[in-house]
Image (cartoon, rainbow, N blue to C red; front, side):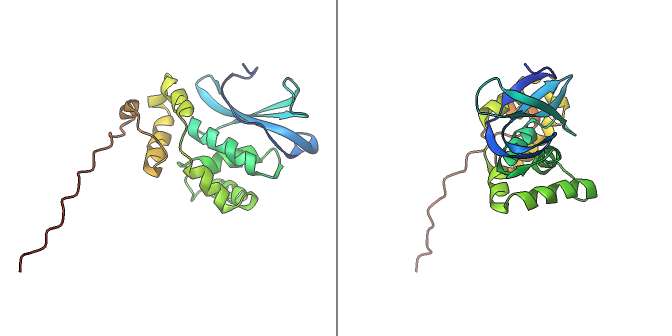
Length: 191
């Protein structure tokens, strides 16, 4: 449990150059998803080494929405950045959200920053990665999920084809997949 909230997902550690948070050195970074007071946050933990228990600085980056899937994707985006600073988590969260209004100049700036920092192929791979069951379980377990932006995020992921079917998705208004009827053999007209 983080002192700032409850950690609901622990991302993988990665090694990168950190030039922010009062640091300018190669460090290990771990993105986590944290909840506090019905809000979702991306927490970035910095480590000097890869040994357990040596976290040197916790930073809580507040999301603009309650988008758990966006937080998870933002953590993957951060793992692709070669030189991380304190603005990158916010930019990653913005770029990872499918619900961002791209005509907003400030949000567009964050998205463009990520496109400058990581290649388009990596960003595309991240955005097309199937949402893992453990992330979906976090959403299904959230008490206010149907009233939050999780519903919008889930619908957007459905539209993007990154969700595996689960009957609980119906509570978000996502229809069950329909069976595709077998094609009838083509018959040629008699001569």
